[in-house]
Structure formats: structure tokens, C-alpha cells
Length: 358
Image 1 (cartoon, rainbow, N blue to C red):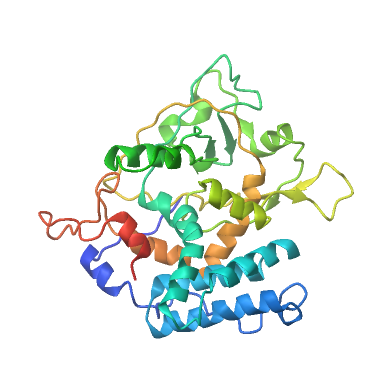
Image 2 (image 1 turned 135 degrees about the vertical axis):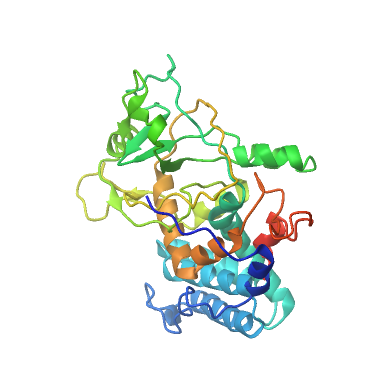
């Protein structure tokens, strides 16, 4: 498996150049006349929302605000790639509701940016900034290795690890930020993650462990028989976390597993999954992953479709290069981004500040 080369420039240089929104790695602008189900001009609500995204994109370009530009593209591409008319209407209504005034005003920009911040922080960015501990296998009497409740499954050279009900990222974060409300931490759920199999700890080398395949796993959980492949967002860990608000929003956006419309079999589902070699974000030096054991049941297979659509939108919106651009170098578990040319200096930008920085 190949990862991008480590970043060679200093963290301070990264921050100085982050506002350059003319980087060739960023995709073209939102299309002025997108191809939408039931052309957008036929639905005033949807068309108004998409025009708002176009206007926000123009404002972001004029103000050289890269984070606003990415948010505008996230919202615009969510309209274009909405999985159903009902989901498209929900997304449009949310955009219109957050558009408080003329798009040229700061209030409106802040409102729309806050609407997209859940996608930006919780899906595309958060778990690259904060390395989470990885779950390892353990032979357990209550989770036979050949059962549908097995803790891991194999897909090519990947292990799919299922974490506990409490997000390990927020468990780590709680130790450093005691002010985080307990209900927020309890509300975070990591569904699953897929990582490359480590040579010296391959699941097939563990005595008594017979790993499930992805197809076996999905078939055992809700009669999911067919996997429809879809490339995921490059270099981003296949990991999702949502509190109640974000989970509700995703559900209203219809980003879940659906019956395969091209199949007469009522138990055939379309699942967004990935068999390519880019599910894991670059593992940068100075970061140590410490395995631990947890025991939970398998995730809902609807997650795979959620990941597929969100990953596609993120790729079109230019999130991948910007996430990597913001990775820079970090201390273990990211207390803050530090300038290694001056190790005695204080962190010049914290992780959460970096998520919103232009």
C-alpha cells in the first residue's frame, strides 16, 4: 500500500499558504447549470438553495476563504447528488433556512458554514486530526469467530474493526478537555473502520480465528446479498461518528442503504463499499497507535451507503487535498500543531482551530 510522501515544508509555511484557493488540486467550481432530477428550475425551493451555494462560492473566492469555499461546494454537491427527491428537498430547505440574509453578508456566510460544519468536521476532518486507537481481536466465548457477531472481518488485505459505543476519539479528548459535556461524549458512536492488515498481526495468524468476508458479514446482517462497489474518498479513514443532530440530518438526507431498484429480489440491497487500497489516511511519523480490545455487535450495513455518498461529495468538494494540506505535523494525539523548525515554540494552531482556519 502506498501513502503520500510526508509533508516537507514547515507548519508555519503550511498555514501561510493555506488560503491559496487556486491550488491545482482543487476541483472546478460548482456547475452553473447542474443536471438534477427534475431540473432545479422546476422546483423553486431547490433552485433557490443551489443559487445560494453558487453565491456563497463566489463570496468565498472573492474573500479568499478556503473553508467557506469547501463548505459551499459540500452543500451544492449534496443537492446535486441527493439520493432521492425527498432528501434533495430537505437539504434545500435547510440551506434556505440558514440563508438569513443576502449571501454577501457575514451573517449568511456564518450560517451556511455552520450548516456544513457537521460534514466537514465529523466526517472528513475530525478523525484524521485526532488519531483514534485501533481495536484488536480477542478470542471470546460470547463472540465466536465464525459468527455474524465476530469482532472483525477481512476484505482483501483489510481488517474491518468495530469499535465500542463510546467514540475513542472523544474518550481521549475528554482527558484533555474536561469541560466537554458528558452527554456529548456519550452521544458519539463510531460505526466501523477499515484499516490495512498489519503484517505481524494478520487476523489469519491468530489461532482459532476464521475471519468473515464482507459479503458473508452483510448477508448475515439483514439479508444483504449484493455489494455495489464505489470508490471512497482517497486517503480518508473509513470512519464515521455522529451525534443525535447529525444522525438525524443524515437520515433526513436519505443517506442510507436502500433496496436495489434494478433487482426483483426483495432481499437484494445496494451497498456502497470499497475494495480499493485507499481507505486509510496516511500514517504519519510520531503517531503511535495502541491497540485495545472491545466487544460490541456489528454495525448497521446502511453505514456503507452513507459513507459512499458522503465520500463522493467530499471528493467533488475538494476535501481530500485540503485535509492532507492541513495535516502538517503533529505531536502524538495532537495537542497542537507545532513548528518542528522551532521545537520550543508553542503550538501555532490547535486542531479545532485548524478545522475552521482559512
